[in-house]
Length: 154
Image 1 (cartoon, rainbow, N blue to C red):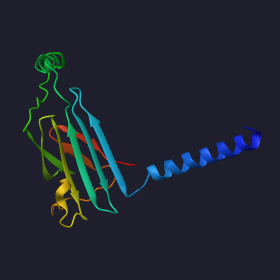
Image 2 (cartoon, helix red, strand yellow):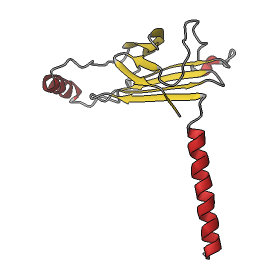
Image 3 (tube, rainbow, N blue to C red):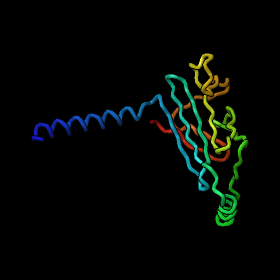
Image 4 (spheres, rainbow, N blue to C red):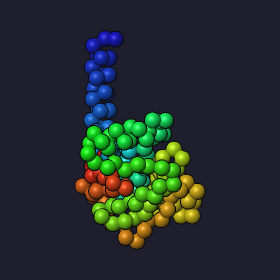
């Protein structure tokens, strides 16, 4: 590569990265993530333009020694961590409002999603937004069970 090709490549790379950062900070998109000490994960997203919300919760597949590790962690921390099982129902709160529930499947995963544009094609699990769904600006707290996160622009 000659110097002009290298300069062009670096310029294109800079534009790509700057543009990517601007897109990543879209004020209409808010996201939050949290991971607990016992491996539970929460990922919540809200998109204002399309009016979509999703909250994904997972614990991962329990290993054979899950019960022993759970008890050891409780003893070490001095607190009672939540233990999960398939079929557990976890309340989902947005800005303190109960908006729905997540039911954990056999893999200890679950999802709650709302989509304004679903219009009868709800085969993918999307539901209509509940009447009490609050505004979702950056800084909004999403809580699933005992795990919560604070929304940031993405």
